[in-house]
Length: 122
View 1 (cartoon, rainbow, N blue to C red):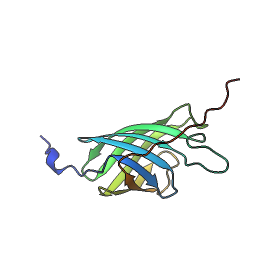
View 2: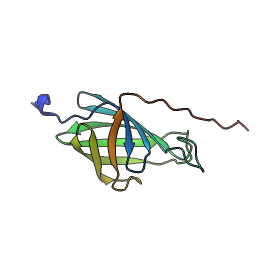
View 3: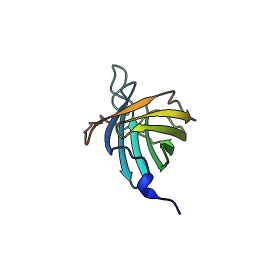
């Protein structure tokens, strides 16, 4: 029987990666739900290059998350990522099967809104 009182937690809310990409994370017990997307640049609107959803679990001081791109952005990838929880406001990639690199994330706020610009249908 596991003791959930000792689960390391991160804050739910809006997070940014070390490269300023955008992540909305919801934690419920030891479950983690995730929406990540590229930041707005001169070349891309928010989420138009890549946008993915993920679901994972907190195990001790790590998050094991499975993710998949969704058809908002250009990418069509999926994989897993293992993330070390540094504290409730900061975490970093330990291992991944995507293009996360050695990203770090920092908690920014409880909420943040975004505006996706859709392209016209052809």
